Amino acid sequence: MATVIQAMTMAGEPRTIPAGAIDDLRARLRGTLLQAGDPGYDEARLVWNGMIDRRPALIAQCAGMIDVARAVQFARSYDLLVAVRGGGHSFPGHSTCDGGLVIDLSPMRRIEVDPQARRARAEGGVRWGELDHATQEYGLAVTGGQVSHTGIAGLTLGGGMGWLMREHGLTVDNLLSADLVTADGTHLRANAEEHPDLFWALRGGGGNFGIVTEFEYRLHPVGPMLYGGLIGYPLAEAVNVFRDARDYLATAPEALSATLVLLRSPEGHPLAGVAVCYTGDPGAAEPAIAPLRRLDTPVMEQLGPMPYVAVQQMIDQIAAPGLRYYMRSNLLDRLDEETIGIAAEHFARCPSPQSIVIFVQMGGAVARVVPGATAFPHRQAAYSFTALSIWTDPNADGENVAWIRSLWADLRPKLPNAVYVNELTGDEGEARLRAAYGPAYERLAALKRQYDPANVFRLNQNIAPLA
Ligand SMILES: Cc1cc2nc3c(=O)[nH]c(=O)nc-3n(C[C@H](O)[C@H](O)[C@H](O)COP(=O)(O)OP(=O)(O)OC[C@H]3O[C@@H](n4cnc5c(N)ncnc54)[C@H](O)[C@@H]3O)c2cc1C
Image 1: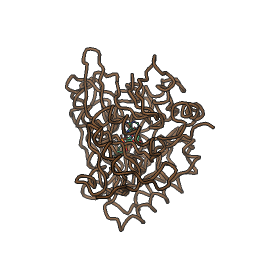
Image 2 (image 1 turned 135 degrees about the vertical axis):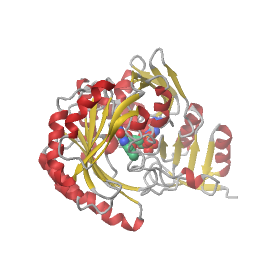
Image 3 (image 1 turned 180 degrees about the vertical axis):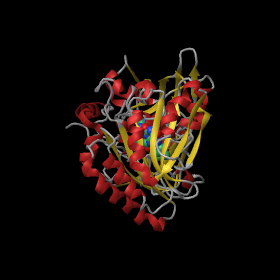
Image 4 (image 1 turned 90 degrees about the vertical axis):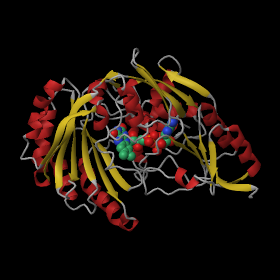
């Protein structure tokens, strides 16, 4: 039995930890502490993106807030590198690390719904599918991501876009309160009355300010049945189809949300797809969607009434955990024909049939929140563009990464420098990081100095504490 284990400090230096100290931490946790060689370690270190393969020294699978606090205190006492994991869906793999301590909230899945008050409390390891399931029991929901296996924690802290945002705002616009463990291992609650500055920072500032153990959300009546699905047109018509869809959607009711998507059908045909979700009166759904069915001659249509939870799972399989992913994303002031044309032209040459390009319609309630009211700065963006390379064979990494880079090289000069922090990758540099936080950056950096001066929470889209 080893008497020490090798770990890594925040500064990237080697650090040995006595086995006795690890035993002591293990005894003080209600959850499980894993190290290399333990049963379950190799499974526990996996994250959503199969391109990320890291080996933490320790993984603390926390059972509650006290475990999280003890893990933070332990990391501080050995100056350990810390990664924080909610749902594990960070594109660049920020929720794991080599040599450090992963504070893993995935066992923390408690959800409480108060249907009268239309509020829900959910622990930091909950996934969107679980929260939707619990809130839909009462015909309620909060804006959540479009893939049900994504974690609520990382998604909420960056802003939170989804099918409901045009009617009900971003996830952060519905966040009422957050319980968190701060960098010194203490517990506090942030909301409009308590630590309001911190509450502001949590609504768009990512995981920089502490580990949120519990979120409280405002809920809205949604479904349970609504109308949704996908209309597919030939890829060759992408420019006309997406342009006409954009023009219609600009004045369509906010109950109608659309995501324009370049994808391949199960038979392998490249498509310009219009994915829709209509949350309003079911009788009004078909007329609202009808113009989107006449943009050209559809080659496929899968539309109809479906439960909200099914809408939330429509693309779960496309983005399944463990596949290999690489991406670029940007926010658009407007969706113009040149952008669509470049994306479609590259998509026609995409090496993997699984890859997709999406344009998520924003606006509505997102744009009605005063800029600066939360730390999410991109209130006026019209669409969020994402090109996502998806493949399975590690030998094909080169060509699939190259495809994204080539598309991006052609597109980037045409686009504003604005990106959603949760869709920023790990290899885009400081200017893009600044573009993600936009005008919120300076205030965030000042709050970072106040709440995390040693930058303990650095494995994220990191805001360096203001000097
Ligand atoms: C398949 C897929 C679909 C997506 N769809 C959407 C979408 O529809 N809308 C949208 O807005 N975004 C979407 N995203 C982006 C998503 O918001 C981010 O990937 C988000 O970080 C995922 O959260 P997570 O908890 O699963 O991530 P994790 O990998 O666990 O964490 C990501 C970051 O958040 C921090 N963090 C995690 N948990 C906590 C916590 N409890 N307290 C403090 N910090 C924490 C981590 O340190 C890390 O920096 C999608 C991503 C994927 C992979």
